[in-house]
Length: 105
Image (cartoon, rainbow, N blue to C red; front, side):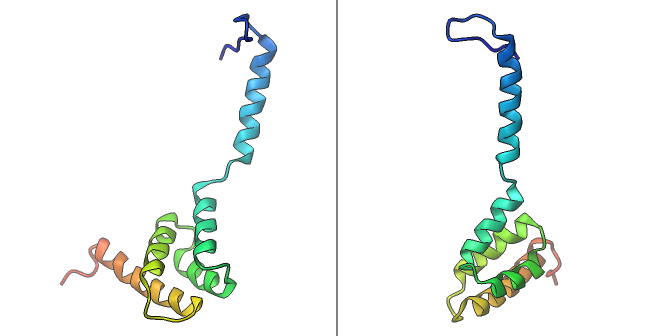
């Protein structure tokens, strides 16, 4: 990687600085899992009981977290975050069974 100054001259020291900057950015970036976890936490209104129930279903599976969030946003028959989460987990389990071909008769 060649780094040049504004005047177009080679800057060998800039190579080291660019590499250091990339490393620092990498350390500061969050992963897809962490992003999904934050989305789940926000969706469940930071209710730790609901998050515990959700995590029992999702584990660290980003797909399951996304599915649960979508199902949670569709549940309007239950009152309270934990009750909505419980229903969303049930709906997610059923959806996964269909998607995985386990519900075929």
